[in-house]
Image 1 (cartoon, rainbow, N blue to C red):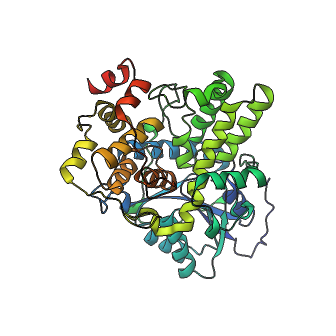
Image 2: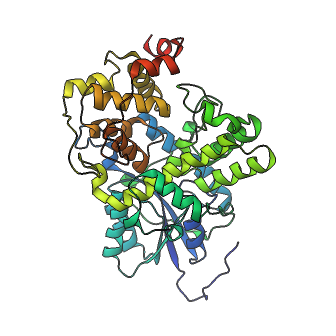
Image 3: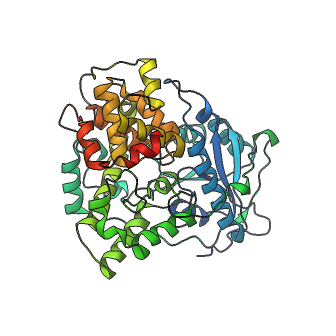
Length: 436
């Protein structure tokens, strides 16, 4: 929908700044659509924060090569889609808070638009901006979750600490929101003055086509993959039976990397799954896709309930794990040199590709916590560095879960590695590939 001009010849145009974060798409982009209806001029911003490349408290750089390249591909894809709308992304590198303050203070923006993100640090960034610029018109909309917070049948402080009661209440009360259509109009682009040293050039050579068996960043690749998975391969009808495969491209949806950067929204996925159910088949497997998205949803809301506890050693439960941090053991696990073949194969796959299956993640995390007796936070930090589908809620939430300090009534979730190997790699093909 095109916005009619709200200014007179002598009136200053209303100016908006939209900050892309983990919402790198134009379909189901509620916040950008809302902001576009309020302003006459618009700047589209993405910040590559310096803190992503500085070792954290666990000695690990938060964003590694695989993850960063996937983000850059997604940004380049977004830029290509924006070009016909007369826009391009202003990509800046530096301290996010400093960049935002400088832009908002120096270029007379009237509005700041963002998609809601429930991460503790991400929420603090927005709170700081609102405190620094109390008169700024903030446009904050939700579209990275299946539901809006106002849809939930409970307030955040009363979200159940175990998944099953959450799922039961959700399924009895609400259904996923319908995604909005792709943005086809944007207000006139405004290019602010910024220091040349802050500018980050997106290299077009990073862009590559989505092919089966490999991940390519960007909304176009995400939508292409979703269509292929559902309507060309019709793989959704067997998802529940095949989802635990250690390495099979069509075995699981493989949508998590695009969900993580927001190249596709969960609402768009569910809309297409429902179309698949209406036109092809509805069974336990198609429901199980929704079931797994509900887990993602659960972690997203639960992290907002617990804030900084999401990252604490004791997690969201009383008491602390009986584990330690041994640097030598940690390094051997990172390098895939633990002596447990199935674990080492998964860890080497992770290091080389930036991806490992959900079953593989459970096995290496269980080994890290139970066999090696290591502080789970170091494992979570290593995943954060490598995974192209890193999501703050799901990554740390799953590690809390495996460490016995999260959303599980049992103290430990320990996997029998020998039995798991026999079930999921009976011929040794997976181990042979990654350990050779």
